[in-house]
Image (cartoon, rainbow, N blue to C red; front, side):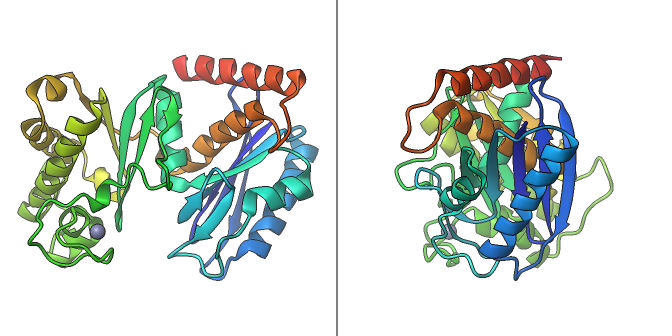
Length: 310
Ligand SMILES: [Zn+2]
């Protein structure tokens, strides 16, 4: 079993995926702002034990964390929705306690991995529009995290250098015009299905400007929109796409598909399970991977591609 964990502000969702790519076990644990490293590690240990008893032995674990992560060093660095997290060596501590490969990544990154896997895609830009705007870049089948882990942070692309000040300290980030918070502040309300109000349309245009600029830089063939605001539906998606295509080279825009996220609320945990598979393929930190763990990882990879195709 590969265990994927989506750690959130109200719950921790755990999913175990077998070699056939099927979800065999689910567990939900209530969380809250005070859910710190000790509670998280204890809960994950308990879920690993339950999975082992009810579904089968867990071979690797990965956690999608709601905040800043140093994936390479396995650190959960900080979170604005969970207190008590400061440069925590989450992956290393889990490996020490569980004795299996473990990894941690940002929760938007793990959701992007699921969107990649369920489509069999290799290259995509994932944009999650909720309270804020998160993003992730998948290139050649791998997350592109960047030197410091910030790659894909499309919410802080500047679309108006004379605009208002963003919490990040700079002016005119797209986050200030297109996030769920921005829509709310401008008096936007969820319009009837099939329609887009003026506030939502302006937000979609702002996001389209940022995505179009990003496409000129990365030229990926697929943009996936997720998060609560994306639930405005196809008029919203069409408006973002049309504006983005006007803002980038015509050849890039014509070749790029815009799709709604398929993951729903389990995407973060499903993607974390995929990340656990990648971690298993690498072997334990600092140790050469054994041929047995490589073979297990390859079996999971084949199965997940098969499940995604089916
Ligand atoms: Zn900003």
